[in-house]
Length: 110
Image (cartoon, rainbow, N blue to C red; front, top):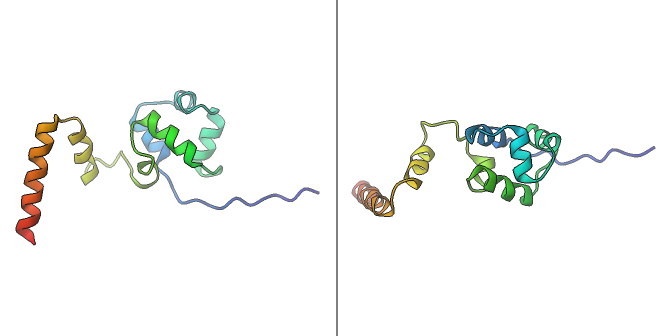
């Protein structure tokens, strides 16, 4: 009789939230990530382990960083991360001004 191999349990991810945030169905996302919809479903629910390769492909599909998929819920728009997302859309000269203001605020509080 074959023994079942126990896979290490991974912590929660925000894969489903990122997919929904980008307006993709599981089938659309799976096509972009180059795996089956069933496998993506299992990874999202935590019943199948993800790999670094998967995280990198998913990050490309969801236009985010691989680490964000496991540490940041994009649906929580009242967090500092949402400001960072908005800044990515701003022209470079505006980002430089925002950075200068933040740096001045940090210096003032220290």
